[in-house]
Amino acid sequence: MQPDMSVEIAGVLLKNPVMTASGTFGSGQEFSEFVDLNRLGAVVTKGVASVPWPGNPTPRICETPSGMLNAIGLQNPGEETFAKRDLRFLEQFDTKVVVNVCGHSTEEYVDCVRRLADEKRADLLEINISCPNVKEGGISFGTNPRAVEQITAAVKKAARQPVIMKLSPNVTDIREIAKAAEAGGADALSMINTITGMKIDVRRRTFALANRTGGLSGPAIHPVAVRMVWECAQSVKIPIIGMGGIADAEGALEMIMAGASAVSVGTANFRDQTTVIRVIDGIRAYLEENRIGSVRDLIGCVR
Amino acid sequence: MQAGQETGIRAVQKFRERAKVLQNTRIAGGIYDLRLKTEQIAAAAQPGQFVSVYSNDHSRLLPRPISICGADPKSGELRLVFRVSGRGTEEFSRLSAGDRVDLTGPLGNGFPESVLKSQSGKTVFLIGGGIGIPPMVQLARTLAAGDDEKGVPRLISVLGFRDELFLVDDLKAYSEVVIATEDGSCGTKGNVLDAIRERNLKADVICACGPTPMLRALRAYAQETGTECWLSLEEKMACGIGACLSCVCKSTDIDEHSKVRNKRVCTEGPVFNSTDIEL
Image 1 (cartoon, chains in turn brown, yellow):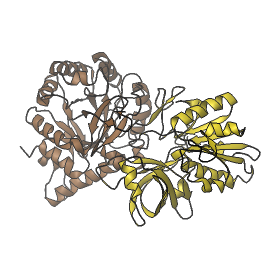
Image 2 (cartoon, rainbow over the protein chains, first blue to last red):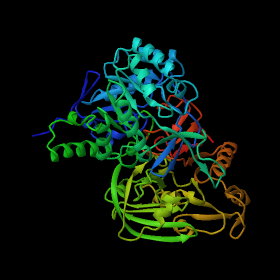
Image 3 (cartoon, rainbow over the protein chains, first blue to last red):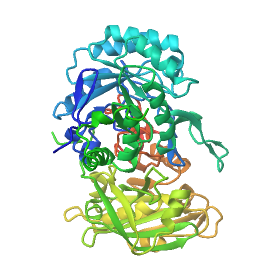
Image 4 (cartoon, rainbow over the protein chains, first blue to last red):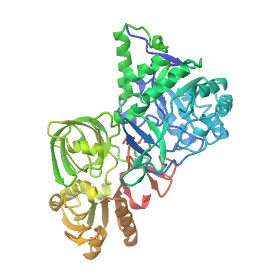
């Protein structure tokens, strides 16, 4: 018997629990040359704001042991182009679409969410209140519980789609932030965003990134992400989408067992464009081998 | 409308392959000549395109973009000439015959059709600085083969080296060669522009790849002399296929795809008309 791979996030049924992490997959168009997007649980698009953002100077990335640092700075073409071009492109696929939203202020987040209200191709919204690479809007919102609750409530009021708040790991106790998002009315949580880091280029004797600091991602951060997902799964009732360094089915299953209802694959897409497919096939194989009827039976099974 | 038409990007199919190493030779200090057997990439490759080369050590996540020095569509042989500049390229320098290495390619736009179909009677400068020289070999070979109707342009390779020479004989097979060395050990003492001015050379079209200061100087020279100029840029990349926006350069005008003054080196480039970008 085929195991049931479907999961539910805030009333939206995903055919499997595997999505792409925002910023690593564009809107799917470039990757669609390598990956059948119909197979994905969802495509999570790169962060979009109400107007175009130019992003940071280069170099924007560098490699680190089992990871990388990025400081793209949320370059995006603005909501209008995104809706006209990227969401239209995604209409041809049988998958869910999670639109990641960024802003510099509560007003900007709310404005962008309002513009997306009538977009039928946007199934869920993921609110990025945790980008470490922009001074305002990103991390300044995501590290203060009061601010998280307020912005969640404001976005929730304006949004027509279910709202996922994306949390920063750059805090003392992420459970406080998770509870604040839940109190503000969030339908789900995404965690974790990148961990702030720095690399020095010893040949040039300067910062490897033009932005000096960047967000660390990749397998290096996976154990931190699993720990934080597990902590929050014990603290909130809303579903969690787990991400941070997932590169194979084992990494995804760890997240699910720690309490994630779904997972996102990010940096690993850069090494192998088909990582998401390998993760989906690997989870199914695990369920078959262990005679588990539904992936839902594994969610939070490790307490 | 064909894919890519809107932005003028050549619509090419990209392939992911596990290529077999045929041969890997050190041709100068820290410079390696890697020959690979590919199934599809070599047959599809155009001059000025590049490939993403992946480490076999999974703790190194990001592919290294390396320009294509040669591609034989019949045999499937792909030639990459690269400089060891870090842990990834150091690993590639140790590859030997029979080893396997993952590739994605061909990537990027390559030199435009208008250059590849240059007429006889025209002069084309192929300017390479250091590790920017390898893509000029593939370009010279293609241009020297000529166009049935339009003939073959005059090709002058202007090569800049710190000291040790490499790929000079490869370019001599297809073009006149002018050399500049920083230490004066061969040719003009100085840079590629010094060599051009010393000989009072002139061209209708410039194609160049090399360090940013060289490209910046050539951009200014092209503007002064009113010469058509195509520059191949380098930038740190993550996905290599246009999704992550790591490898942007500044553009003169608002870009059609990004809607800001940024172009993706991996997709709109790596070859740009010098008037379209800022350096």
